Length: 214
Image (cartoon, rainbow, N blue to C red; front, side, top):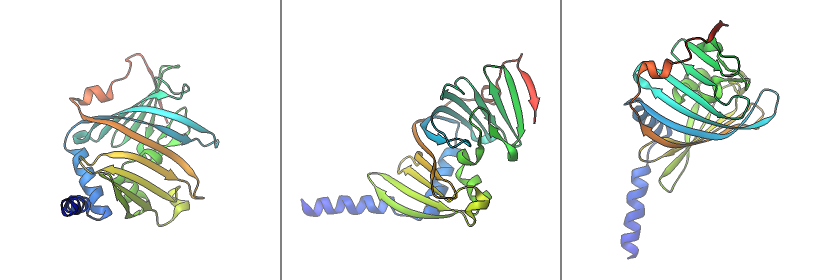
């Protein structure tokens, strides 16, 4: 029995083996293969320093590089949504029926005062901040990765922690720490699923909404 148990643990450790870069590439490749949807919830710190609970639904169309984020909480942004495209970000504000349009590089999440840096993809974070990733732990069918930027002040954060499920390699938890090392965002991801989504689905907003270009 001990030999069998030892063999099981050995096979599990081999299945989880790999560098941080290997895991990131594996996860990115999986998320790019088809449209998907997921839910995310947790806590973020706004620019005022206040901590607030956040809950959202995320829809992605990888082939078009379009992501739609629909907010359920906090109440200040409930029923708002954000549409992220390669060049622009559209913020829909439910209470005023307005769509605020930002260039991608200056995009903010209206109502929370957050930039998209805290919610960027692994690739975007790596390119923008020159992250160095390391494999920090492996347990119970998941891995923990830690990424650190070359210049925390310039990047706007000092560390990113990412938990990935081993199979399929989807995010389970995502934490971001500010330049001072304080926790700025802690998000748990769940219910990842392939979805039948179209460009029209993700870009949709009320036809009578007022458009505001920033």
